[in-house]
Image 1 (cartoon, rainbow, N blue to C red):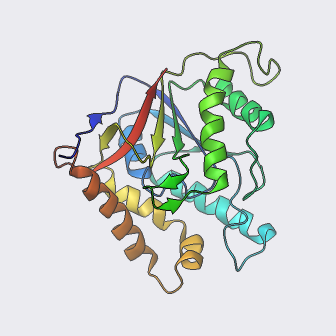
Image 2: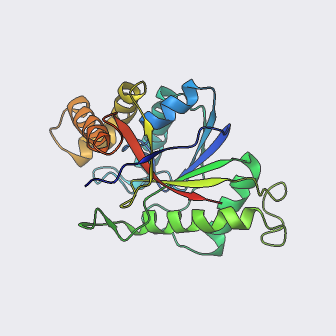
Length: 241
């Protein structure tokens, strides 16, 4: 029997989404963000890199600005106007105190109640190996939430301790626990991924970006509907604090 997912909490106002690359949030999470911003909630995006190593046909110096522009356009589709980039090097992000410090500083600046990150397990679905960047950023995010609330850890990073994070939600988890009904945000989730046109065209040569995005995002939502009372959904593994 398929285990049913619980609804995500909705008694919060500010969220900070921390991921490694432009496009990480659009591969499934954007539709949920659209639902949240429609409800008047504030969502900020934090990219640890500019995704400059993500397009084989463009040098990093060329790809970085392209991917930054695509991410800003993508975020705007789902109602996000605040997007930050940390400029760690794409492909070789190192888990460690430098990364934790940068993320803790961002959490202290934005003071979120909900922090969102991406699957940091070794695999996707137990079959496909995850990337070092995803693993490093996800794990560092989990740790930085605690760091941000401790005034004696990274005391000079950010405006002062913030211990108000109530949950961390991991998108794309192999073992989700909660979900968001994305009926009203699904179309914008598709269009948000479509904004990554240069990346999609490099990743899937010859593919139509709209067909690619629609099949992927709508397919994810339909699959999660099987364990969310038949409603199209985006799922998360929720860690209460």
